[in-house]
Amino acid sequence: MVYSRITGTGSYLPARVVTNKDLEKTLDTTDAWIRERTGIKRRHIAAEGETSADMGLCAARKAIEMADIDVAEIDLIVVATSTPDKVFPSTACIMQRQLGIHGSPAFDIQAACSGFIYVLDIANRLIQTGGAKTALVVGSETMSRIVNWQDRGTAVLFGDGAGAVILQACEEPGILSTHIHSDGQYENLLEVPQGISSGFDTVRDGGAYIRMNGNAVFRKAVAMLGSAAKEILSKNGIDKSEVDWMVPHQANLRIITAAAKKLDLPMERVVVTVDEQANTSSASIPLALDTAVRDGRIMSGHLLLFGAFGAGFTWGSALVRY
Ligand code: ACO
Image (cartoon, rainbow, N blue to C red; front, side):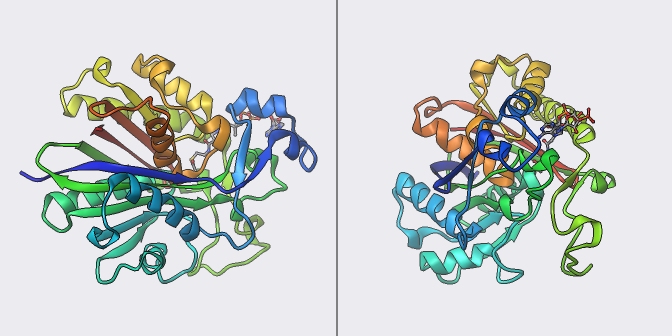
């Protein structure tokens, strides 16, 4: 039996930091409100011209270095992003060129904030069925490009960044299981209501910016994170007490806290980066993972529970022996 395991992690945050105090200058909001309702203190914002591929590449190089592999060994590149550099080619193909890799499959997946769980699921299955041996799996987002900076209800929530893992074939299971779900009936609760086939219009529906029913998304998010975690633990016959670290999608500290409470997981075993990075959509789980790996919290042999939800709605989970 072939399994896959994470052998390297990497992440990247743009240099520019925008604090809540900075946002006070342009929005009718306060640092206190943002901290209390979301737990967010600051976010990183991409420089002009800095793209999802650029950030993904920086994260990928760090993951490649940690895995101690030659770039030429990578035979699959999958990138989760809702903010690709171009309509085509894919961000994955752009990164493939930047890395100097030729011939391996490279493609993007769009599953909003659950994107990283989706690409992990796909890469894991391809490795298990012999389609690849060494996969570069990335989440990278320039959310600042689709944020309406005049809308205090959403502008305070998001940030830019990228995270990456190297997933390699092995004899012992690293990825124990992954579960992905969608329900398109919630389309209007969280969307960027513009696209290629419907035609970009800078005026219609408020422009190509994130639009969200915050309260409804909040309630759904807590329920989905909780049910995704319960589903994966029960399918693997694992008790929550065996989980060393929960690494959830970083949307809002209150959502994370409520989901951890539902699972009876103490916050000491939950990786939180939303305070420093805000919501980086599909990049948030690999960013949080890399942060906790590099600061020594996550160690070899630890059991990790990833959980995510996002527009669609999409949601999913992964159980990983690191
Ligand atoms: N500063 C000050 N006041 C604000 C701000 C702000 N930035 N934003 C909203 N308010 C006001 C509202 O206008 C409202 O005022 P009113 O009572 O006079 O009408 C009041 O604060 C309360 O608004 P609510 O929306 O009820 O506030 P809530 O406690 O629900 O918090 C929030 C809002 C933070 C958006 C919350 O609903 C939330 O986190 N939802 C989930 C968001 C999320 O996670 N989205 C992304 C998930 S999926 C993905 O990652 C893409």
